[in-house]
Image (tube, rainbow, N blue to C red; front, side, top):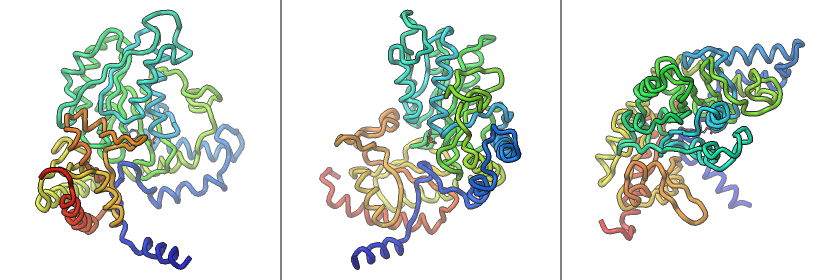
Length: 417
Ligand SMILES: *Cc1c(COP(=O)(O)O)cnc(C)c1O
């Protein structure tokens, strides 16, 4: 009992530095304040025509306008979802069903989030969707082409062009990679698709913009995309709410068949408070993003410079300049990422490794392998992602701890060095 209290106290007193904003960000205080009334005072169902319902509907539509405004879209082009994963899944399955008579070929990349990779994998299964007519050989599941990035994570427009066929109905490419932070040349890729499509309806272009919306400028018309996924909790909003932007004129198969919510595109009573918080987060991002991304890019470059000058045999993964302002991904030769991550956690620092620990086998990250990083260096990577509450002092503390941890781990490392 006494020991527990002491441990609790030590845990409480320990300096905590959160450098995992790409995994999730804390909700902004102003977001929480905006959400609060929609749990009790304005608790109505937005589909109800009485006062209570209309209060909720009004707030939801205001939020829709704010989200649309942030990405240069029209409010009616925003469909609320239960997060980024759902938005990605909706884009793939919605197009698969809607375009079932036009083709069965998808193009994506090897470095997508599992939200895209596993949806695509599902669609390759025979007769995976009831909407697909059975019996026709070309309708039995989808064929997926996975584009390989260059070493810096960039997808080349020529490679996309070469993969397009007259059966291609959808291309899905992430705006920025969540592990290594590389920002893809979306505008150039969209031009390739538009030229190929001509006056036809397909293929459509979807981007997973979960890591970019609210962090760097994103405009659907400027980029030339048809569908775009957003998640609120990656931009200081609540978890479990997101949106799919669907360009006017595109009809997708509804994601949830049910009520008429979201113009029949996603049944279920809306997450009103979550949506209000999402809207507030987008409004704040619009006002504060420009100053913040400059501040973060400076901190990012400072951190990289400090680590490189104080620790030997470190490499930066991802593109040197075309990268998210808050992303740092480094490989530390001859050390396991997991050991570093856990040692940092003991020092109160939260970051992430690229590897996924599954059933006793430690697979290196699919992103690192796709970039051509050798498996050993892929295992030695750490991702630090910065955010609103990150200070220079946090980074100095992290570098100091990292220097000590790396020295200790390299001293006991069985690898040759
Ligand atoms: C976090 C993330 C998602 C998933 O979003 P959720 O709201 O957590 O479901 C999808 N894509 C990328 C690139 C992400 O970083």
